[in-house]
Image (tube, rainbow, N blue to C red; front, side, top):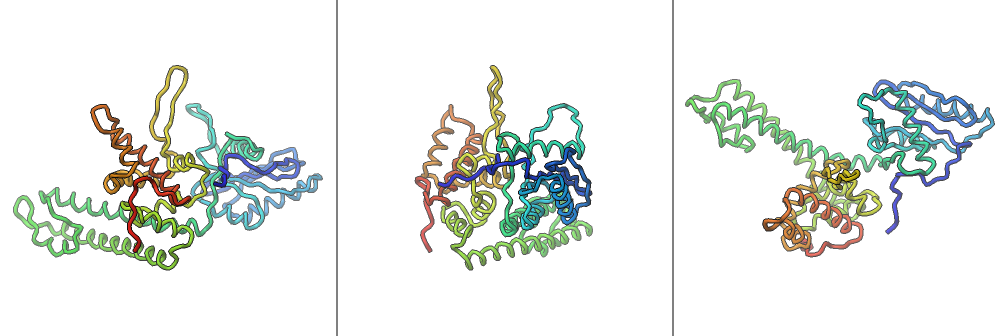
Length: 387
């Protein structure tokens, strides 16, 4: 397998004499731009409105200053911290010939003082320090985030929107059940499609009908619920149509391959592929680390303990994998992974199931990653017959 750069250091040679280095500390109201200009002793710092064109003009101005100082610029390297602005600025600058990088926020080491000073100016200085170390090829300064294309970002939206709508559906149903429970009504299922017709027949614990305001509130909630259900159905229908139109192209082939595993549906397969499996990760350790399914050791002197999951990766993929691990035990009882889990949890001396399910989720993720990248089917895993 080809080794993929893990973005923990730059692999390109860094020439400080001909490289203009720029970092941008971004906020909602302004951008603070810091630069290291060859041939210029001062380290310029400029506050701009959030405007990419103004940033480009500033970079060109600093380039001209370097040329006037006798240092022609052959490379412009710019970095900013990952945040609410996403990746559009990096893509916009790359299209205009500027080498752009996005710094992983959690990879930057900060002072451990209880009340450390924090300003945009200090943050810009810190970003410049770690970015220069990264450009020199030194590990440990910071890590970069892989910049996705517009198509890759857009492909994740349906799964994420569906997850949000499913949570909204549960919230509406729970609110209606709570409103009815306050009146002593239990067992009524407000999520059923004929529930609005049955509201008039409900009786409270005191033998009276529902109050008028409660009925109106419930009808509005049921209307919202119907709309949410319709939107979820629309997302699922559109996704199925796209899979049918291009079943063997790119991530679609991965989704169809994963969905052949008994116990994995289209929704779970699509989420795993879009969130993690379609990424070019270096090895199995990087795969587990991206999902946040690695441990957090705490060792110093005589102390040696484990603080639990790192939870530093993709939370959506991590939640889905733990849910999938429980489901995997139901549908793939004879697989090697299920036997491994039962061996370690059965009996009076077995480990806690909630602890071992995380280990199973990690092993399952690596097995699925190998399945979609090399075609290696996990031992004992049953596949759906070809249609």
